Length: 403
Ligand code: ADP
Image 1 (cartoon, protein in one colour):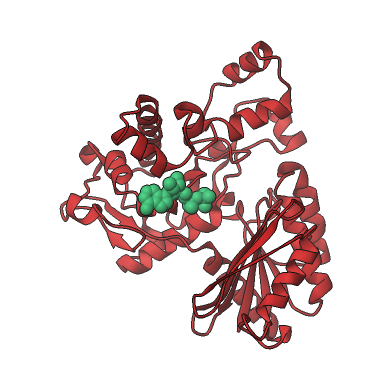
Image 2 (spheres, rainbow, N blue to C red; image 1 turned 30 degrees about the vertical axis):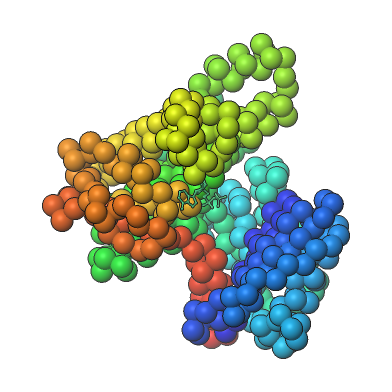
């Protein structure tokens, strides 16, 4: 069975065609700058060769048609005919309280997704555009929606509620939803396969650290708390996002700087975090170089803040879980940055976390246990694979249809 995974963002489309029988990636790519000048498609063929296409792509449907054309082309394609695609799995950012697992896309599901637009006005509309485009282009192929929020729907009310008037929860659905759910679910399950332990019996903390970052506490197979909240802005210090911040500071800044909600959103989402503190870059590698080679103090401060916040979350989630069996690192930083993992885990022995420098140093993007043999909790690097998780969900839903 061949499954096409689509992740449609506001100006980009990421895709991966997977042969589920062999698990092989048949093609993968990203189309960027949709609706802007100089759209570009970076397509990696089955043989691993990267091909670039440049042109003007004005909207998602045209972009998807273009991608399908490349996937079936004689020169760069992986399939002869579109009929070889058995199902499509879509990444959908926000499922609100309506979706606690992946679903077959039907008219009713789309109606509910439309209702969630208010909660994710930047993300859900392009996700829906991808769904509409595929319904148009391949009307007979089943489509499945996989939600970033779904895994966190198991959080108890006392963890997901904010202490604001209850009426605001009822009226607008203001609560913690959490994001990166597909990644947290994938790495937490994968680490249990890797360690050969039962997922349903573990206390796990997963740290997804990329440009965006979040931490999740998983008890007996269920997410019980996560650092992102009503929006993906809450929680850790991220590349350009502020993370946790006193609401009083927000209103104060808005008043003093005389800015409205749109500018405040941009300030806290795009000009804060590592970039805001360092004034140099949102990128972990740039900051590491600036801090060590150039002795840049603000870069060093940004990195320290990043590590300190993660440490605090790990401590609080050990309290929430009542212990810890496994700590997982994933995402661009979690998978590749040994100095970050070392700093985050330093002086945590009393919480059962002790990493082995020999195993940690120089470990990039591979599955590996990096804790010492005597560490109470296993510390493990697990490269995330959200596309594979989406394809797996899609497969299991579509297989039920056939039965
Ligand atoms: P996104 O959230 O956009 O998917 P990624 O998961 O790709 O982001 O993570 C991007 C971050 O990972 C950047 O800060 C980058 O510097 C960091 N990163 C990627 N590779 C390495 C590496 N080899 N060493 C250190 N940091 C890395």
